[in-house]
Image (cartoon, rainbow, N blue to C red; front, side, top):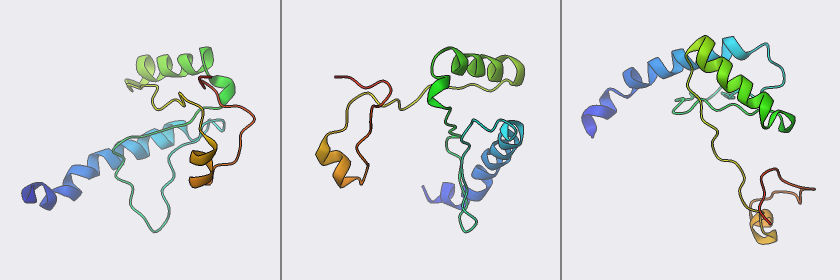
Length: 107
């Protein structure tokens, strides 16, 4: 409630420090898309989300997950894979172009 709101900055600060450490650790891997923090915004890093290239799906991504856990103590999860084909209405309302194909799509 209100008590937690007063402590919000204090509660977010450790996540921001950890996120910056992770960004520094992964900065030299150009294939990864790391979280972006616009200059006029403060990210809370509720999640530290990275995007791997489509070519990394499977074995190479799994090696990254294993390395992060075993060498750096960073737990990861594969989250939010695209599991269904977007309908034309969904694409048009979200202003998403028609793709050639999506990974993990179900027919």
